[in-house]
Every structure is written in C-alpha cells, then in structure tokens.
Amino acid sequence: MEIEARRPYRMNARAAAVEVTRARVLDAAAALWMRHWYDEVTLQHVADEAGVSVQTIVNHFGGKDGLADAVADRLASQTEAARQAPTGDVTAIVAVLFEDYERHGDANVLWIAQMDRVPAMARAAAYARERHRAWLEQVFADRLPASGPAREHALHLHHAATDVYLWKLWRRDLGLSREDAERTMCDLLTSINPPEEA
Image (cartoon, rainbow, N blue to C red; front, side):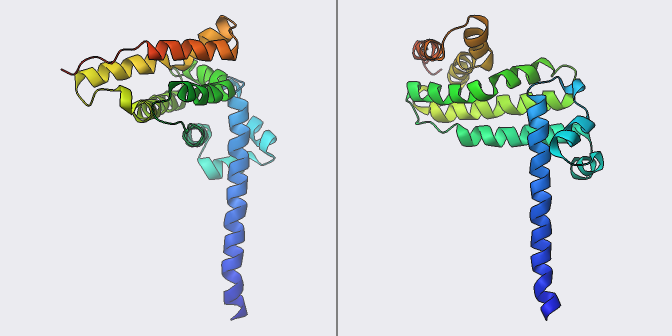
C-alpha cells in the first residue's frame, strides 16, 4: 500500500522535473536565437546556456530543427497571450502590438531574414503570419467587411500597416521614438477606408 501511494508522487515529481528542464532549454535556445543567426548557435551552445547535456536536448527535441520548432511554438503562444487588446480601439491595439515588437521585433526580423534557407524559420514565419492575420480579424472586426474580396483587401491593408518591418523602419532605420512610431501606425490604420463589399 505504501509503495502504491509513493509511486504517483514520484511520477508527478519526475514529470515536473522534465518540464522544468524542457522550459530551461527552450528559454536558453530562444535567448540565443534572438541574438544570433540560426547557424551560429549549436546544440552545445544551448546546452551550456541551459546547464544540461546535448543528449538531454536530443532526448527532448530530437535535434536542432525540432528544438527550433518548439521555440517557435512557445514564442507564438506567449505572443498570443500578450496581445490582448480591446476590439476597435486603434490606439490600444497599436500599443499592445508595439509592446510585443519592442520586446521581440528585432528577433522577428532576424528569423524572417533566414526563412529562405532555414526550414524551421520558414515554418515559424508562416505560422506567425497566420496568427497575426487571425489577430487582425479579431481586433479589427468592426472595421472589416463581412466577407468576400472586399474583406481580403481590407485585411491585406491592415496586415501591411501592422507588419514588423514597418516597426523596424520607424524605430530602427528612421530612429523615431516609440511614441512617434505608434502615432504614425495609428494614423496609417485610421486612414484605411474599408472598401465596399462586392
């Protein structure tokens, strides 16, 4: 009886330890890939950063490509959780978007720059575009036509106006303050006149 009672506790403790290790590896890999090119980061670098062995990473993720997919999934989930904005309030929507871009925009640009040669980055970028579109449909629901080509056109305009490359242009290339860049994006979004439905 005592043995049976102890077994679930041990299994729960082991599962918790596995999750802690997995999270530590994901944190380490994300931190490295936010600053360095994919090819520059080896599993040994990630292992050293996380305080685990390379074999531990392989056991959890199967290798570098699987690790990159897991990092992309985790970052996408964190982004979705952080992007809570009231529908229709352009200023609040832009503020939430900029909060995300100020934290991860440089890494996003770095990942996108590698998508033509790194399959994991291409998958991450495609998924991020898909999730960004879904977010736009949610927060700009009141500004979009109900359906058809007019809705697609309006979505394309809103997508272009909120793209991370515009954030990069304003904040990094042109050196705008965050306040000025946010105001510029708000002006761009509010200037979009939703087209008439076909």
